[in-house]
Image (cartoon, rainbow, N blue to C red; front, side, top):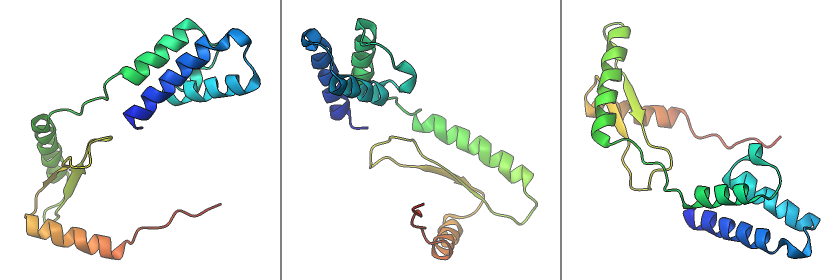
Length: 139
């Protein structure tokens, strides 16, 4: 979720909370619940209290979680690769990929393999060619 959008929603919640002197109508209650759901989750439904308002502000202002450092991820991937290599029978190649959720668009993923890069790229291209993306069905 966009950080600016979260901040705008938290500001809107503040205006709703402090503008409630004229009474909360159904529209204001609905908007409050939508903001609470968005920033805190449905389990935080309840009254418009100062505590909930503060929790909304904290959720909007909190920095996004940072993924582990690349060197740490690389070391973990190498451990995973050794385990996979030991579990597979001889003659099998493998690739293990990982990526950080909510990473910036230019972030790199990591991979570990027991094959050469050329073999991995060739296998991945063949896999992509044989498994086209499916359009989600509408039920």
